[in-house]
Image (cartoon, rainbow, N blue to C red; front, side, top):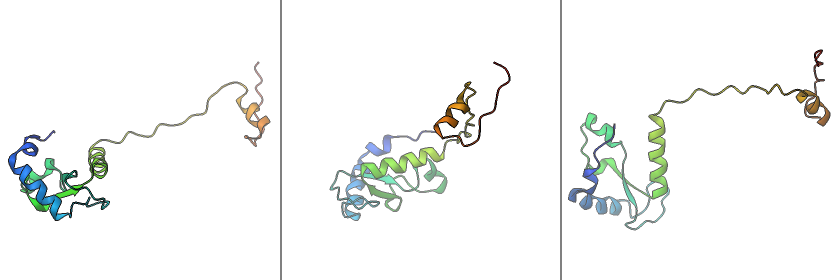
Length: 119
């Protein structure tokens, strides 16, 4: 479920963003890189979950100041956590004729190849 993007462009958001940057000393709160006002405000608890907890969108205690790379990494982790993990694929060996003989000849396969009776 996507959250409404409109609060980010509101006058309230534009007013709180410099406050969050100043509170963080204009540095990323994860990697401590100096950002000035080019950083991004990020919700510590995602916007999709704050309604259930009764936290406001503009609550400064739920906002942190991040650089673009730290913000992207955090957002990607949150998105990945919401997805189902795919089951691992089984890796089967190929049945190419002569594969074992080739591997034995090169020294990769230490077990002697099986002899096929059919030609």
